[in-house]
Length: 192
Image (cartoon, rainbow, N blue to C red; front, side, top):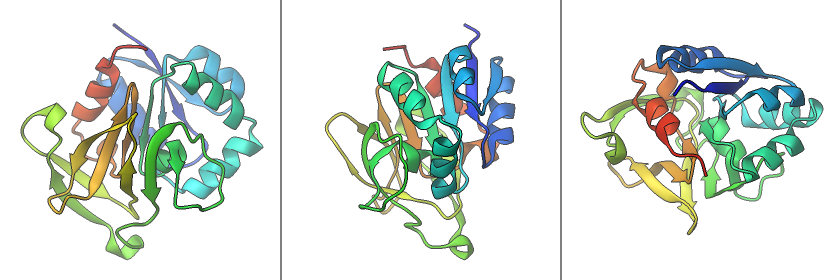
């Protein structure tokens, strides 16, 4: 079924997500204003800089309407900074968050820009082969609460992807690899 997917287009790598969603046959709306939320069936919050994304959500009066829509069942896929914005806790740091996903995230868990890296990550819900994952100033999911579940770990056990109903958070950037399996999986999740 063709859906209309919003991509938060305030900051970050939204163009790459747009390409992935369009390759999978869905329409895209770039979300910049609260009225854009009325036109979408799901939302992707891209990587970028989470503090800036949070500030822009406030500046563009999107934070509260978005929180209301997500709590009402809007499916959301957050990658890297998007995962941070979805988390209920980021180690006590003060920044605007949607805060609806039962995960605790540590920002820049793998280091700064120079420590960015690529790795193959097993994502059991996707089957084989492992997903080639790109980590750029990546967070890590330190804790997954009872409402969420782990869907991917690094070889050392570090949690790098979680799901809560129709919400998905990844520490890496699947949109940068051309492997659309995680986007396809998120789009296949049933509505609440």
